[in-house]
Structures are given as C-alpha cells and as structure tokens.
Length: 121
Image (cartoon, rainbow, N blue to C red; front, side):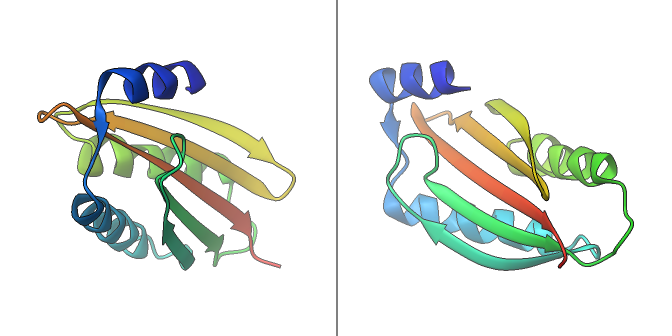
C-alpha cells in the first residue's frame, strides 16, 4: 500500500479539497449505514497515505471482526471506489483493525483514506 501511495503521489495530483470533502461525506455516510458501527470522528488532511481519516466503534459486542472487515471492504470496493483503480489493505490492531485505501480517479487524481475500527469499550 505504501508503494502504491508513493507512486500515485509522484504521478498524479491529489483530489481537490472540495472533492476530498465529498469523498469524506460519502464514505462516512456509507459506514453510518452499517448498524454495527458508530462513526465517532472524521477528518481531512493532506497526508499522502491518509487524506481522509475515519474512526468508528463497533456497537455490537461479540461480533466477529472478520465480518466487519469484509463488510467495510465491500463498502469500499462496491460502493465508494466502484469502477476506479483502487487498492486497500487491512492491519489488525490490539482492539480492532485499520483499513488503508487508495483510489485513482478518471481525472488523473488520487484519494487516500484510513479507517480505524475499534471494539466498543
């Protein structure tokens, strides 16, 4: 994932601030549709690997983390980055996981995101 972000940052321009806000809104809205998640923070930045940052907590105790990972992957692949050249990676954490995403748009721009999902405490 780091290699993809580095290559795209050299070859493409990042999406505009306005586009970044739209991506952030769309991704957060899609995650709000998952009844087992509560989005607790969203932010935009201009870091190569995480232009969008979303933090979510799992609302359902005992839910298998693998099912949540698969659903968020589906949201990214089938909804948010549909028809784009897109990549993502998952990293297990002590209390959940982090999904890093990147997509190249038709306008030769790119967007990156970091979604941190934590078990409810």
